Image (cartoon, rainbow, N blue to C red; front, side, top):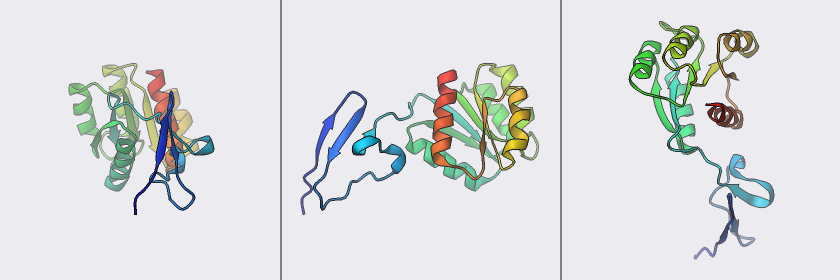
Length: 164
């Protein structure tokens, strides 16, 4: 069965035209705009993000999602390792868990501010309202509440990168 799919390229979107019996190859709602337009506004592979979380499953899932959105992702499950990575590499954004053994989120934030004061930092926490005010007072850009809403994560990542 051949697929007869037409497409048009516009300034910032690609429009696909499918016959009534065919299903689109891309079905993620976060990529679909009005009238079935697939947004071409993806992450820039030059946007380098450091992910820090002591939960390997969260780290892997979020890393996979952000890579699929076009970001260059570096991961670590250890706050001390994150500090070493920050000392040796420049990052456009850091996303970190708040509560971790060893170097916790607040200690990591202090180190980030001493190494790279303008780097935006997003924190992740299951205790959103409790940590949000405290972390923002200490220089965090924003807080992402666990469990994640991937559309919210992507929106906050893009907003933070625009600030840098």
